[in-house]
Length: 267
Length: 268
Figure 1 (cartoon, each protein chain N blue to C red):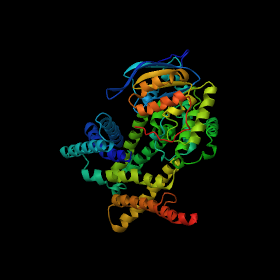
Figure 2 (tube, rainbow over the protein chains, first blue to last red; figure 1 turned 90 degrees about the vertical axis):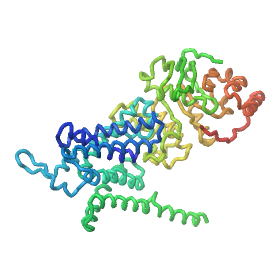
Figure 3 (tube, helix red, strand yellow; figure 1 turned 180 degrees about the vertical axis):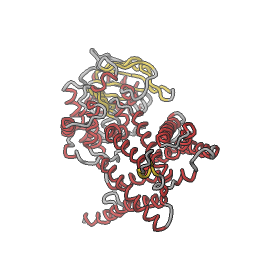
Figure 4 (cartoon, chains in turn blue, red; figure 1 turned 120 degrees about the vertical axis):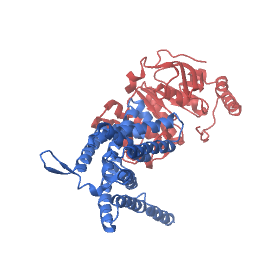
């Protein structure tokens, strides 16, 4: 499942470019719709190749997203003159530009960074989605056949979830780029998984970790005068490593200590 | 030998199910009675799980139709409970025992609604019935195989259904848990519920089930255990596996069964 997020974050590129080429506007709603559509199409293709083509899931993911991403890259280079996007920006993003990209109303009032509003809106949508659909998401993820048996459509919820992953990805994409999106999609929950066994706590810890990673990553970048996105991705690895070693129950060191103390307890 | 039930709760007509165009169940035609404990037996790959998955609409039929409570599945879902095989879910999923049992209430709750107090009470009561009351806040990753199976059973009980389909509820559980489960299933049928169980252990068939289905890609036999479960039908169901069969045959002749052997069946 983790790699599906990775796949989507890359595969939405042609969606973004096509949405721009068709409407000619770079406004965020258009982008979100274009990317969201391709995101769901990506998950559909992954399922399709897996089920009908008898491909393993990882192979199916690999084929689908590289191919879609490549189309995106080709579209950008072909329409380079018309598209206000470039590969570097898409891959690495440039979070340092966020404060400059302001939302200014028609009356000329400066409302602050544009990305803040987009990401904020998406955050509210996702929170509402999780709040309303928690029960169904929980069940269809844990036990799809039971869900189907009681009449809940697992396919619908799968695509809704993947749609949510898509719009989250796209909203973040603009500011931080695909690579950092993947790091933030996977590292905080993976770290939280080592720290708790409760799904709600896991989501809360993930969010807090995301914030900690961003702040510490920013200062790491400032200190080393390096890429901000790169430093944040690096910090997500550091946090994961710390949790892996020192987590109270699942931690590696704790497990070793437990192993060593076990024989003495037996005596 | 296929005996039809009077006033059937499950009615299957000419059911054929295929995976990748290769039929795994051929022309199954049967009726099942209400209020009984019903066993589905047959060798590995005989289509036992497939049959109940087809009944629950989890896999499409190539032909035939199924009627439950003389109605279509979609109209009677809330009266039916399905217990999947234990290994089909990820038990490392971050969830507590209570979370899982509450899933049994989701069907009654409907979409978007949160479990109410009454649902928690039903769930707790179900846990009590499987002797896991003290485990309600335990993480599911910390449970033993037998406890996992009982959690699934509690979830099924929380559904408060009339008809239960269970896929191998005795797989990988110890003898004590098996006893607890069978006692529970008995109580359920005594209350008028119907329980259909996929089963592997031939030795306990006569002891456990009122009615038995014998399956090997097609339906070999269906009827009351006393009339149906005999050497001839076993021969037909298990075909070439004669060593096992002659053994069972001999046991049947003697009319006595040895104490339960602990040979784990490997599911293909």
